[in-house]
Amino acid sequence: EPEVTQTPSHQVTQMGQEVILRCVPISNHLYFYWYRQILGQKVEFLVSFYNNEISEKSEIFDDQFSVERPDGSNFTLKIRSTKLEDSAMYFCASSDPGNTIYFGEGSWLTVV
Amino acid sequence: ELKVEQNPLFLSMQEGKNYTIYCNYSTTSDRLYWYRQDPGKSLESLFVLLSNGAVKQEGRLMASLDTKARLSTLHITAAVHDLSATYFCAPGRGGSRLTFGEGTQLTVNP
Image 1 (cartoon, each protein chain N blue to C red):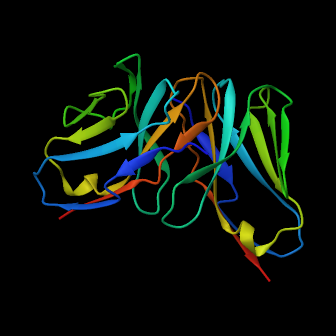
Image 2: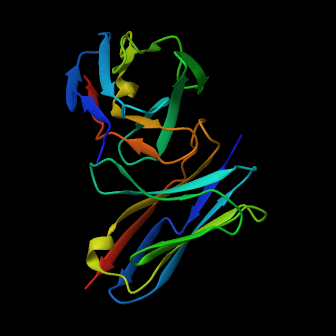
Image 3: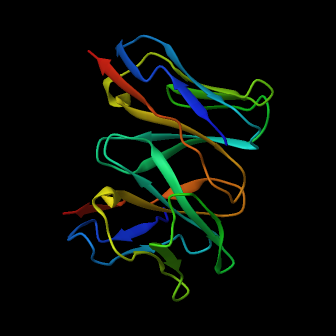
């Protein structure tokens, strides 16, 4: 079964450093997303991406965050200057128009 | 702003028993998803409910959607230990964000 793959699975970074989380969505999907989940809390939407541009973003997705689809397969989330409160599991997801949204295994980000 | 309420948030039940998890949401959505999450793991898609009155079943789980009442239910039949996990509902619109509930942490005891 096709799956969404994410790297790295776990990253520890110092406060103020830049982090890039990478995702390979399912190949025929058109919509891409990033969500995050702070430990023990619910899953929160960050951003959706369609047709090579951001289609929607949440209030969490401020100027410190950016997304990119640098080629035909990768989808990245960059956090420019990490803060302690950015520590969370970051999930990439993808979907075809109108059906199941598939989530990757997640990238654990720990900011120290 | 869409608000999603799940209840109960914590559910401890015995094997073999039945129970229902409820998901209420505040504004119109054209679909509703149910996901399962094991500790430290990703979100596994269980059901996508696309229309009013939709009912889907997979094994011991059955989900339904009432868009007029803005209510979805996840019914567990004859629970087994393997169903222990956190279950999230998430209403949304096609191609748009999902808004997740707080999750229902289910523990099935022998």
